[in-house]
Image (tube, rainbow, N blue to C red; front, side, top):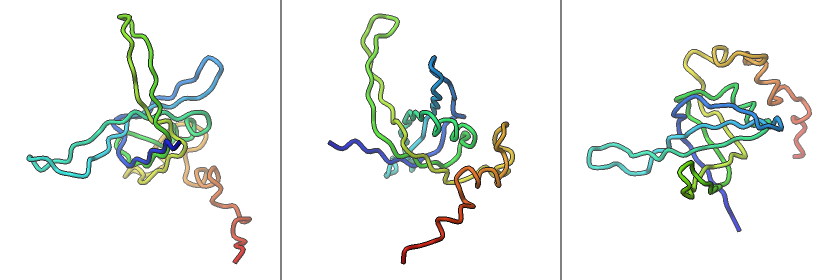
Length: 140
């Protein structure tokens, strides 16, 4: 079976980072993804899709993702059911991200993104191993 979702859209709000009782990081945000047609008013309707990131991906994305940024998400669709406060059974769908790509940065630059230990472009490059010389040895 195959369950693969690929989305490109803009964050509708700043992501929300939380931790489970066992200390596992979880990041939640909503991505507005335009449909591939225009309606009678000449507008492109959008779908608003809930995204969840876990563990290191959640912590990394919490440092750099912001409302309005164009972002690509690859993951799987997960449908959960739960009982609401009114006793009714409910279902919720969200994409659990395996990979998140930052397709643009804020106009005021990466240095104004987030407080914390990694807020410079150089630190970001080290975090994703941009300076790693070992990958330059191509086998062809």
